[in-house]
Image (cartoon, rainbow, N blue to C red; front, side, top):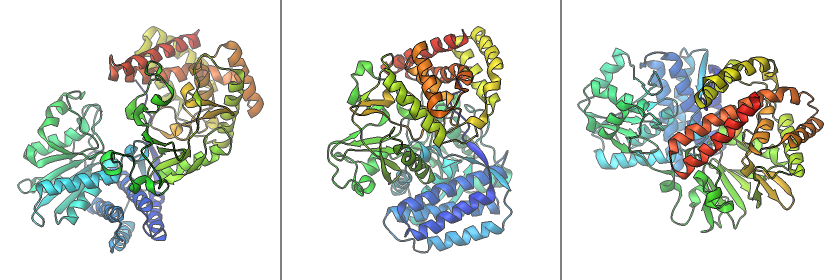
Length: 580
């Protein structure tokens, strides 16, 4: 199934480099506030990864440019560690500035491919957890001043995470060789390829060093992180000296990769969870939330991973939720505040900016601010909408909301039609079989002329009934700030995607669909919606059936799996209707 989209963009190296230097200036101006230092760390890690990927397109190596890039990321990590400890930079900022000056005179590629650090952008992965994991490893295994370590980060996010591990060990007096690599090949059969010089350098330390592999993963297959351990084993490094630093520690028996299932149990792992750093038995601690909510109490509720369903639904009526794809969120009832993870650094700032523009429309909750990567919003009491019971007053609001999105967030940069069509055909073929896929292909060919990237906007992307609240004063759209920028289809698209989503998810009949289109056209002035919409009435359920069936397979016969299979059946029916 195709449910994810590419998380990369071609950028000018000079522009990214200028952004890192600007981050350092902002750190000074803010007195090295923790938020500003973390933004520097995130941006430096992504910049390093982008340049390293460009310099090592097929085989990983180690040279002067890569060494200076690593040095810069580790120095940024030292700043982050000192900031987390409430300490001044103590000269680290000067060393980083000097390193950036060295990089400026070295030959860098003109353009690079920038990739998103998904854990920092979407999933609430906090640098502090890797700092603590490194401290625990050091306490368990190292003798101060007498130890060596090779610290290997898996690009992209592993660049920043491994820099943190390396910096903690350096503080402990460990001699560290910091590296980054990118395993290559098919997603479920990754291989690590490194040149002879780097092999020789690593092998030369096998008798005396620890070998630390640092990444956000493992993913479904486990092959990426385990491929690095495989390569180290081939060099003669014993299993007990290969240690993995990850954001979670699964059993490994469910990995898709057979090789990963065999490799995973052979090594020790260090992982520290968000709750261990930021939460206690009563609620979020002052280190994360107390700055804006000093009076937090035991009334704080964790609504993450679908926990929000307990407020409004009986369990038998729960909407389907993939807990791994949900952002962290906390409700403070006394203060009337909802805190939702919006992203670290620039990711969070972009989310806050969108939330500010949306709140003025009256369609969305009020945005209050951003704190440590969490968007602070006013909590709205209301009753979630249900499909099949939609009134014309709601449709009028939905039409106005989508017209506002189309007007306020134009971008003109939708994906190429070939990628769009591939998703539709692939998902329908795998879900409903080749006969219906052939019919879909014919339909797409007829409608291809209505795909216009120039019309694309940063859509809502989640026009699901339970994300609309009915209040005593009308209707409010929740969860409206970030789905256009997550790593699923479709990101930026024609607003028709949201209209098709509303028609499909609310199970609108012909009369209500006609009303919705007429109101949207009247409010927005878009008179061509009716001609463009049929393309999206096919493509929207094609994406959703792919996502739902993927989740149904993952959850199996559990209640969540049954919910997703029920959704898949809904989208199958919608696809057949669109083709008829």
